[in-house]
Image (cartoon, rainbow, N blue to C red; front, side, top):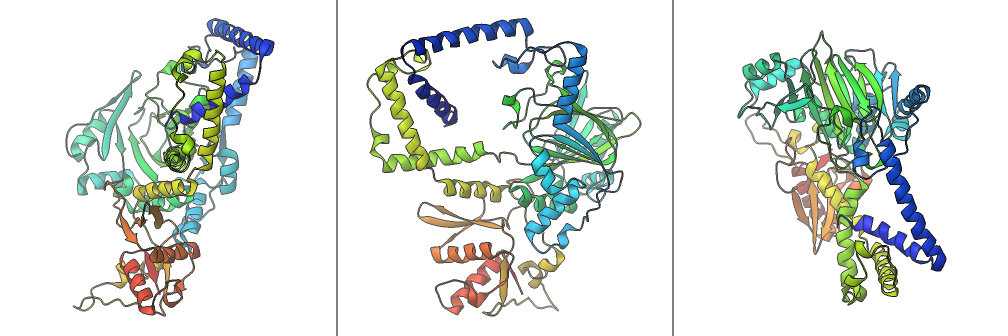
Length: 542
């Protein structure tokens, strides 16, 4: 399954190539062989020299780069051009309210939260100029800009008041003499032990602050709707004049918010196209494996650094002060590749069930004409095989269950999600607030046909058809620990019930009278369905 995309690309190239015949085909083969010889010669002479003068690891993967001009003026000019194209430093005040929870809908809150975090960069400019393309720094010149999110005192309080465990909640790390080490003891992270290792020069990483700190939970939950992706966070506390991690790249879009102190950052461009927007994080990189340095800056308290997936980075605290920053991360496993991994098996299943050609036996001679060892040969049998494979692949595309695959992506998003955070005004209309013990009596919450209801948010639940079942997956029962439960929470619905929830989702953020819900049943049936959804925390009522 993983190789289907590359095989399809190879197949199309081969079909195009087979149209050439006689002398043209012969010349193509000769040109191909000569090109390989020239590439090998160039590689031998240049060794794909990187900015550090060492052999580039992209070359080790079979990627041949053009030999660079080694004259100093040209190299310096090229470096400046690369840095300018891949990074920016922006100065200016945020001037955007941090009170994003006052907005009236979840998507308005998401836009406002993101706009506040990256200000003065405009949201539209971020996506058109920077997203997945360029790193940038915002110099807010306001030490209090992100102050409400987290502090070293918060970390100390967490260790004293919560059961934090090494490896699960806290990592102790160091990077000395180009060697990255993790020093996690067994068991609970006792404050005295953590601070002792910190005083010895180790960095402290809090892996899931959103689990324990309301402000971080609120920001991450709110931003998830901006990206249609789980948004998480890590907090990093580094002693003065130390570095806790080796140079590396991450598989997430990283927003680094400097909370205390200062940190000296170096950001390097991806080393080759194949390492742009990676699906997995890198190993710890050696000094000679780094790419082109495109950004070097000191983050002061209140500053922001954005790095797209795949940008190599390292950071060291200043000699005279500690550093505390929080990294907000998004878009892990949220790529077209991840989507196709879900869609292609479904496409093959549909095609196999509906088209006899997919169930026919392979040609008797295909093992003698197909495969890498035969890739440069020509025969009628090979041409026929390639033509048939291309024909079936085109049919496979036509059978792709695109919407069903999107629903599966949404199901994964629901599973990843943090539990919802509501503004104060919406909390008053939720089941949690309306159903409170009052004057020694249990609460009685009643909904009637005239009550107005709306869904919690556009991403609070998802209707997914799976076989003969219609399931509603929802986030309300999720915990603050990432995927603490093996499967997402769900309720099986009838098609008529599913239609009502889809209607509420499409009408969000409007309130709808219960009696006006498009449910083919009595008024009492509509009220009963609304009460069920309200008690699950999925509806607000007024």
